[in-house]
Amino acid sequence: MDKLWGGRFELPPHALMEQLGASVSFDARLAPWDIRASIAHARMLGACCIICEQDANAIIDGLQAIGEEIAAGNVEWRPALEDVHANIEALLIARVGDAGKKLHTARSRNDQIATDMRLWTRDQVDAIIEHLAVLQRVIIQVAEAHLDVALPGYTHLQPAQPVLLAHHFLAYFEMFQRDKERFREARRRINVMPLGAAALAGTPHPIDRDMTARELGFDAVSDNSMDAVSDRDYLIEFCSASSLVMMHLSRWSEELILWNSSAFGFIEIGDAFTTGSSIMPQKKNPDAAELVRGKTGRVYADLTALLVMMKGLPLTYNRDLQEDKEPVFHASDTVQLCLAVFAEMLGVIQVNTARMKQALEQGFMAATDLADYLVGKGIPFREAHHIVGEIVRHCIAHNTTLEALTLQELRRFCEAVDENVFQALSVETMLARRNQHGSVAPDRVREALCAAREKAN
Ligand code: ARG
Image 1 (cartoon, rainbow, N blue to C red):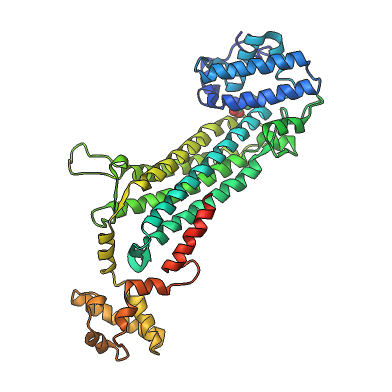
Image 2: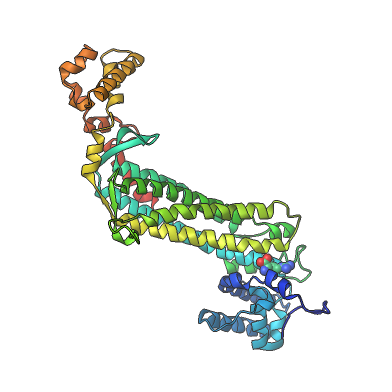
């Protein structure tokens, strides 16, 4: 048997039409979800006496057997049948005969694909949330193992003020926490069942949508059949949340690449996630981080592809919608791979605390605290800011650092300075004094780590 629905046509499709329309090369991966949804549909058709119980059982057994054959790699997909749905239906009819021809009662490929995609996306969302939680747990481990390590914090990529490495890492933890929340919120909207919308207007058969929804784990059934077969918002949300994860990973990649450079020397990324150069024997390149950064643009492209695909579509189903799959699959695969890579890569990063300490001594990072110190001596902040600016200029001219100035030298700029200034400008004091909730003081960071352990579950 060739076409499942050729009655209307005198001529077969042009070979190019087949090539253009076939989606089974990429939608075959939906087979397990398609079979699951078809089994639930067949069971409901039987329970509602729309088909007889015998036929329902033959369909269910047949679909289960086909699922096993597909999993074992024993099925040859036929592009002439267009998509995964028609391929599985043809396999079913070939296996169980006339009963198989009744499976498609009271449904259309329009509500079928909408249901499959929601089931598939729901599973990917769960997997991504777990990937994010794993990465968060690695972040906590690395932060805990380096609790006393300080380094410069940057604004404008210029050394600004000292921070704790743990605080820096926990900044990414927060980003991934919001990413998890975004996926959880998207999941609520994903988990609504379109099945029963049929082609667009519903079906005259006395189906029980709630029964099918329960069996498939949907929280609700869709409220409008025309919306149900044509809505792809949830895929746009999925790609949007994925894009934000990639944006976060890409920012961190950029930073790890900088830190790994010989100019910074803050970290060394382990051999397992670096590669050599074909010509320069000395090289060890941070390719994993670079590839994550590079792939980010392609996930943004997936989001853009969906937005553009949707923008001109009238209700209801249009074949353009078949083009949703490749971008969504790509975004999902990429984000999961990159999250897994990051969780492993962070585990093999060597932190060079000596280089971080050295950097702390170089960037005039105590300048703000020196100004605050002068404020403590009764000098208005604007004036204090100016005095410290002059001191910094003096240091630059004499190729020295704030910390290296003697009390006498400091007093030449401002009489109010006394010997406790050195204590005020130590890294420990600067960190400890930033003691508000959310700030970098070691006590606050320890608290943040406790809270993070809760959130990472
Ligand atoms: N392969 C199709 C898709 O992905 C399934 C739905 C086909 N529906 C139709 N009316 N041609 O969108």
